[in-house]
Length: 300
Image 1: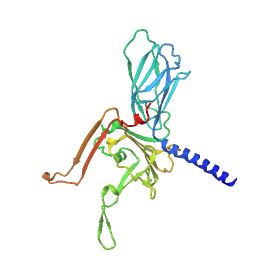
Image 2: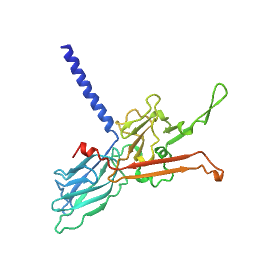
Image 3: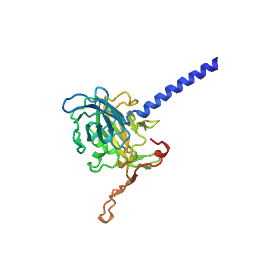
Image 4: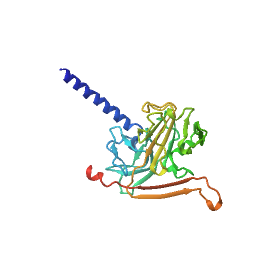
């Protein structure tokens, strides 16, 4: 009897551990697209309209009230397509999805009599988003290409008010009178709203990468080519972000597209022929594209 009771307790503990681990993996990884579909002339809601996110396997159908919800959408910019028998196919471009936010897209469908080409509508970003309850700064991949000198995720802190990057002295004196030389990049600390790096939660694809001993970031130097979105929360962030006092840094990495792409970049200030050098060298190599193995192991 005692052995059976212990076995039951183990099963219950494993169940709650699974739920806890699942919540950690899902926190801060994706956003949601929602809205309402209605007839353009009568303004009546349309049930059974197929809504898909082009380039992905995500989609939904409208309910009796014409509403739809697409959850688990990775951050990025997409095209949304609405189609149904008896109505023109509508394609909405420039639909931007952010982590933990809902992109509201309402669609007006026009009944069809004569077959015409697909209607393309460009979505506009709202000035005020009602579902935002925290102070946040979001930098998407489109912004990376427009920012001069943006090389890694650390550079986002230079763009947000209330953040500060401090550096310790280049050398530290030792007891025997000698000097210990320090690398500048390894001794920088990030401050948000007065809090040190140990009070900040760092996430990469929803997984915490905070140093387990003294806090702060253990991995933060990600090349800009590997990042889809960087989100900085500095106040009133949600309860899903635990172990954070002054701020949250949420980094979402890129996924491979349908075509292979790559690039090589090298920068240096070692210009000996001019007699100037600050010993700064930066190089990067990246390759992205479709992963051909999963579709054979997990066919849809």
